[in-house]
Amino acid sequence: MNQTNTDKTDADNNEPDLAGITAATLDNYNQVAADFREGTRDHDVSQNIAALLRHIAAAPPLMLLDFGCGPGRDLKTLTSLGHTAIGLDGSEQFVAMARADTGCEVWQQDFLKLELPAGRFDGIFANASLQHVPGRELPRVLKQLHAALKPGGVLFCSLPRGDNVEGWSRHRYSAFHDKAAWWAFMNDAGFTELEHYYRPAGLPREQQPWLASVWQA
Image (cartoon, rainbow, N blue to C red; front, top):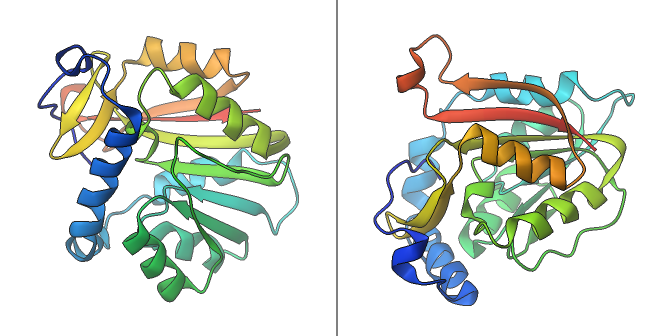
């Protein structure tokens, strides 16, 4: 999910078909699932997990949703910390891997056709996943995530930064928002910012393609 260069903009695609976007993106993830798991297995996102957990006021163990859990790397970490974590991904291959590797409950759901229980989660971890939601659908999806959180619940998200263009990037549809645009989406969905930072840590800003942010419902 770590893509930072687009091949086409949304304007080039002339409002592409949502079902086609989803099908092509998930087909690519299914095709490369094994290589993706190996290539991301050792990625250190401990900074992001800590950012989510330190802002949740509820007493542990927490009920967490790993939104776009992929093969289950972070799902495994969250459960190893003593929390109850449920995974969600649209890729059939990723869901099978995550279930086998973690033993956790994992839901196979298209990001554009979510069926989430209301007020169930203390926190949602959306690490490198929400960029696959087309901009015109993002307000609805963010409101669904807001509704799935308990009052005062926390959403973490990490996104590749960009200039508010979206389109095809390495056979996956991705949107690249700047800070101002992302803040507008989140505020409109009813979230309040708690924290933000750029990744990888310790590098000049031009070498930090990821914008991480933490929000309260």
